[in-house]
Image (cartoon, rainbow, N blue to C red; front, side, top):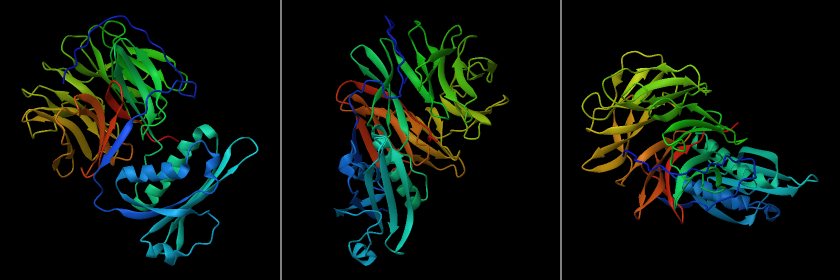
Length: 425
């Protein structure tokens, strides 16, 4: 699990995500497993959706199907938000909810997308909205409709309109790429002939911190994904690694070997205000802020083997968190602060585990054997991680109950280091 990188020439380009970036091969998504309960939802074709660059109905269907918690019933017809609905007919078809809508062209080139979610059991309207969207944002609008359906029917905010970032390696080139949560809309934020590792989203989704080896050593950068501007925030003697944002976006927790053994520090997001959190005779690394920003989880071998600890964000005495197994690394905390995800090596297998911090109950979530880099979805319902598929690096997503699994691969090259972006305002 320790990455050893070769050093060589570097070519780096920061490119805006505003629409001028070249697209790369899309991620292929395979889904297996379903949630413990599936809600049957009929989705009617939106009227005039042929006007838009992408079919809104298909995107909504794909999102809900991928979640594992919906059984999609094809309405087989166009139904608008103003069409009178015979609820008894839909109930006979087994639908507990019905999605309808329409698209109209606006004079300024945008589209007026209207959507309504109907409860067929109670014969009532659950939700709906209208939005004017540009052609380039058609997919985003469809994802937001799917988010609304997910939230109204499941009771948890949907994360279909969020983004993911990851690193791909093709030949000698490394690329930091950003994509929609469904793997579509891939854009390159950074390309280099040197390794890029440990990307981490800022809380507002406008920046990514990462480690680049372009200076012949690991250095921490922060890049603005809107402007493409990038800035070094940690380039101290030795290794600068494992950046993690505080929930309010004001600070980063990082791991530095400036004084010898790697220890945990915090810095202000602009690189100022360096503060040392741990001072041990062991290696302390892989920091991760708690959901409330009051503490920092980290990896340490101070007990004789790698385990996960927690320390107050202002310093103090660390407390051990993981006790099952002799090798637990890469802590990631859920948005609600209740669940700790990590990679554990047991019987020679590196697998994804989740620990309920309230009950102390632990669950293995993956059935692969070379897992790394877990990252929670912003609604806390899924965990994305890197693994191997057919001897190639791939990404996988699993629901926190372990029932729904997805595999994301690219046709050429390896894909690693995933990080799931926050909800966007």
